[in-house]
Length: 166
Image 1 (cartoon, rainbow, N blue to C red):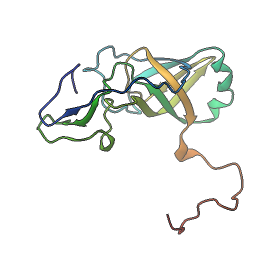
Image 2 (cartoon, one colour; image 1 turned 180 degrees about the vertical axis):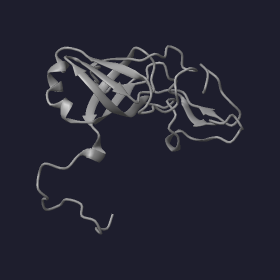
Image 3 (cartoon, rainbow, N blue to C red; image 1 turned 90 degrees about the horizontal axis):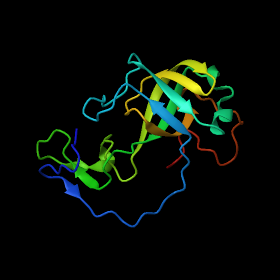
Image 4 (cartoon, rainbow, N blue to C red; image 1 turned 120 degrees about the horizontal axis):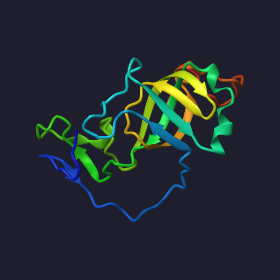
């Protein structure tokens, strides 16, 4: 795990451009047992601890029907991550790779994703297993796990079909 402001052999940090906010709304807060980046797991586990996703008002109105899904994709803002490292050496061996070839939380737009198992819905609170973020992490979005999703609309002209040229 990269420590705050650490630059390892072979890594590359770049100056960050002037801020260009996308206008995100944080729709809630994630509650986990981890308060330190070095203790937080690198990947969530579906048999890990039960964590809470507190969805704030008025966004909690969007939870209707979510209990029908066994797994959810959670998108969150890794607010304690660095944003300037474009080459990283995850094994600290001097062999650096580009940030977009890694699942590191240290990236220009530190958006984290986890596939979680929905344990229980309690009003605006979701109880889930499979998270890998710090307590207090801002929630960006929730979606049904795309691997469980079947499109509702019938196929239309222009839809990609297996065998189409890319």
